[in-house]
Image 1 (cartoon, each protein chain N blue to C red):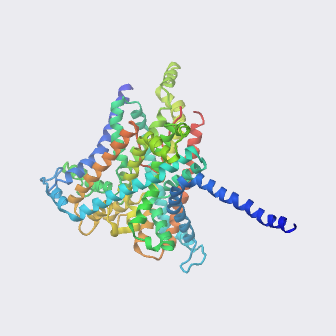
Image 2: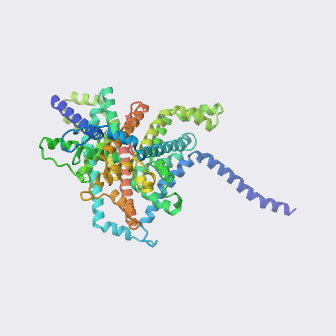
Image 3: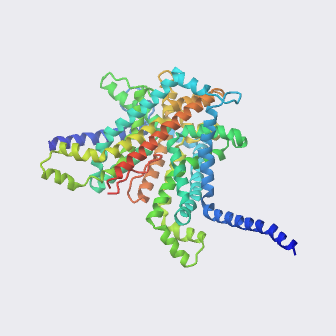
Length: 278
Length: 304
């Protein structure tokens, strides 16, 4: 009975490991394979795709755009979220009601619906914003803000911000000073964890990019799709890009776990972790 | 003499009203100003678009009020099939994630710290990997020239992998992120089951099976159901992954609500009323499952 249980567990985790690692291995091999249509392993290996990727001006621009957008969205979200959460803790609890409601929306609404809604709305009231990266950036900031909101809110609870605020006020500090010199240094890990998730959301997002800007602002997602199924499909180059994406995702996950003191984080909207208070 | 009071009367109400108004405005700003930018972005980028779509779903092409979009969508065979398939994919994915994820979450939560950290790291990366990259990973593994396909064929096993855009292909690709997500979501709940309870059950000479049936599962059930609900909603809302999976082979591609919306938006200006109706159906599904999720968690936490 015990032995059977042990074997069952071993099988379960072996299967999981194979399921998780095999696709990564396949992508990595594709990035080096000359021809791979007949045998278990590629017929030969080459650096060709990596060299081609380095020479590819279009790829360079695509990567720069994607990283730049994700970084800008992250900075914007930090600037928007941190003061709001601070204020909801120390001054006006009613802010929490509104923000928690807003933070649930990207969970209730699939991104494709948000993209569609933004397309319709911007056509009606701000046509000059249509197809611009500004609209895309604001959209990304809106769909990704819940991650930062929950992370920062949790960090402020853990740091007991109302108490810190009281102490700083007693010393005569102004709210902005308190926020910058007292609160922010105490919630660093929360900002970092949430910021990573915001960055990752914008980095891999597809629906808003495709529907709001399309090829006017080509990101890694769009370029990947073109290489996967477009007229000039190129699996070798796509494998190189996917490896790059994977490294970014890995770095983000590792950093988020590290800053979150070993706790797991997740990229699921509405997914405040199911926590027992027991 | 008589003019003075009347002048005072004329001024007084104004100053009583004006002074508090400025005062009230200042206090309102002091209450809300730091949160105002975020609230404005959330309102303009999340709430107003929904209102716009809701309005559009009841709008005819010439701008009049109509139920035609709803009637047409709900009566259309293709749209019914898309809605049904989306719900089926969501339910199937969530169930598989539950069946595989619950035992994994349980075992990972009982692992020694180093081992647990390793598994958590692997699950974390997998959970965050998605979209077009994952679609390519599927093709590279289980496509016509995918690694597993080639390996099995080399062993002369007759193996035809499910087409990427087919139901089977979608489910296999979705689970790559769904199982890790389910595990990460439910691991915190696993801590609720105390080791003492198992010891107490053993003292009462209960078998492992009896323990799980009578104690373990009833306690964990609401948490597991909540996890199921999240994966269900998440899977229904996916767009980039199924789009990329189905992009290669239009013939074997299944119809999903999200894909229909995308297709309408890509194709033309007409038919957007229908897309708005489907968007509202997605909103409805999401809202119902969010309320269910909250209720499940509320019940689950009542005892703790």
